[in-house]
Length: 149
Image (cartoon, rainbow, N blue to C red; front, side, top):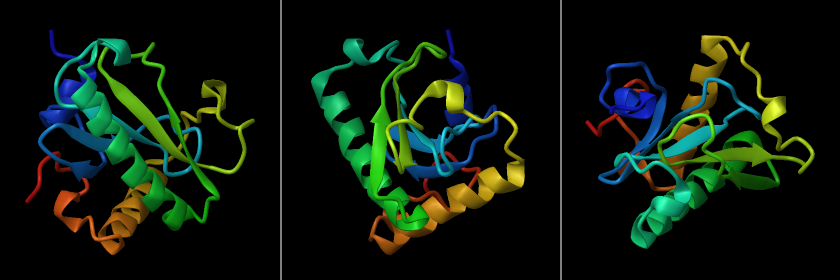
């Protein structure tokens, strides 16, 4: 059965993509905990983190690290945080976000009222920071494109 994330990756549902490679994509969450909060999502429909092959977990971790560095640069954050929960969607994903304190890193701090223009602007800041860091080959040509152009 196709998950909501698979539908976003397939272009059936909209997404704000900042990264794409053969194993995963990174796009904005629609309920960010902090500005620039992204999801690193496996292209393969693995139900949860503990079910994933080690090489996939390693790949997602490296991508999360790269995106986290870009978030730190884009939002002048002292840290990048990675959270693995997966209760809301049975499809392997890592939450990566710029972080200023541990206290803020709670899902009950997620905002569901962020205007689309703000989500677009935050994603574009991450895309620009990835390009500036030499990762342009992984940044999709368009914000809404799940593939490289």
